[in-house]
Length: 287
Image 1: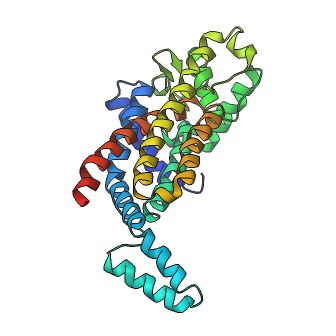
Image 2: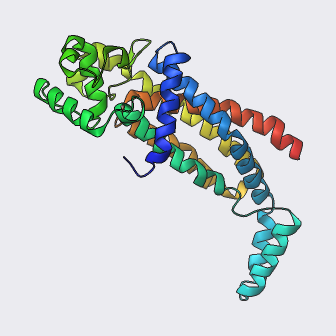
Image 3: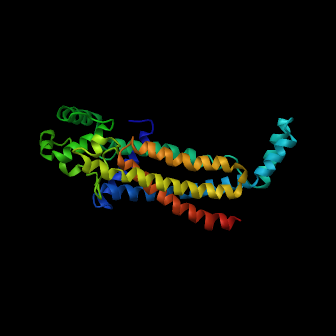
């Protein structure tokens, strides 16, 4: 169990509940519904973070003025800064706290996606090891995502499950297919995979990094546009951040299972509409 296993356990149970009861046992739909629900739960924290960040940007000129005025008197500078925060009702940590709360959740979600047997199906490590040893003897090579490999294998060789009794039942298998995409595989730019015997699997998977990069860029652009309008002095930093997100999405899209990529896509699309709502309704009301 990982460092945030106590969070991954309920998240995995919730994910499997959605898969069985709300998504018609469709893994892709389950990921999308799961993402939207998690984002809605975290929305109050996100709004609070955006409000705090916007207020901090608004008082940046005053902060810079104080820093120049009291550059040789650190104690006086701290006193005046605290007074400025109190007068403007700003918490300097308000923009960081929501991120600190969300980080363990994001790490736990990755554990759920990577280890569906442990966190979604609640199988023991002993069961995972037994099934892993069997699959390893029957395939050329296993990936870093062993539990996904196990489910992929038995989805294709369902009759072989009989010898394992109650360890893993056919009705428990998670089908990673979604609109022609195999969400249990990792997208690749290898020509052997894109134009070889498995091209029908890997060519469609290029959809994940392409759409993921586009969604990340649009979301980053909306956030940096709002930030730049409040604080033009940091335009170069904002532009760097706007391109950093898409680059990281592109890199990780070819390192992680496509299901994680779909989670990012759903999350960024939600974030686009969320940012539009915050910009046009929440922050406008604050102004």
